[in-house]
Length: 283
Image 1 (spheres, rainbow, N blue to C red):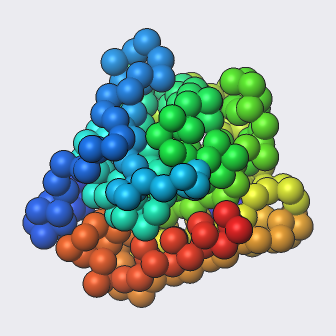
Image 2: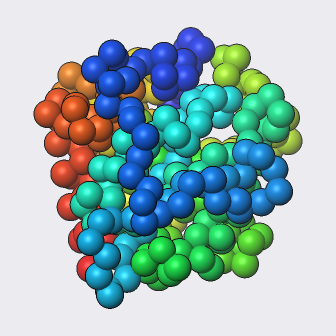
């Protein structure tokens, strides 16, 4: 029996943001980074790069953040608070737009992520990042994209990358096991798939997966916590050696992302937990 996304339309992340969170979503500090860097020809194939202040000669670990929004909404500028938070902790951070439903359907939004990652690997050294220390972080639909890039080797292979090019992956409130496609969101994004099982991250759990941290909120009724629980169980059964799962009491779906912001970090220690996990993985 599969674990489904909640049986209602998944709202874009912005619909779940509180007013204090919106106040925290300010333009990011890109003095030493870059905005609207193209990784492909489409207008949606652009990224922003956040660089820690202070410089230094040592190459810094890289976090590639993928936002959610039901695979149909989202813009990198909205998530500048993530770039700010991680850059302040010493990570070169990349936030990339990708093509959305209904212009595209599965697997194009994952393929765009692979293209962006290839660009990051080939160019991030110019911004002080270490191309050998790339970590993925995603929220909601973005966590799904991140997990597919991590576990299904085909996407990175198609752009000339190895599965080992990803050092670790963090999934916040992600859908990983949601067959059948019985709500409007999943029908729109995945209804074209000839082999639905090939769309599910849980079906690609493998022994040699990189370290994975799965986090969700106990009160998430949009993407049920069972998605994270079942993926963690399946990875462990497959023999994966470094799988962490944490369920944060009282948090809903949007909160696992908004608590990364400067004004809302008091709600839960998600940023601290993510940073500790990333630093341990980098070591």
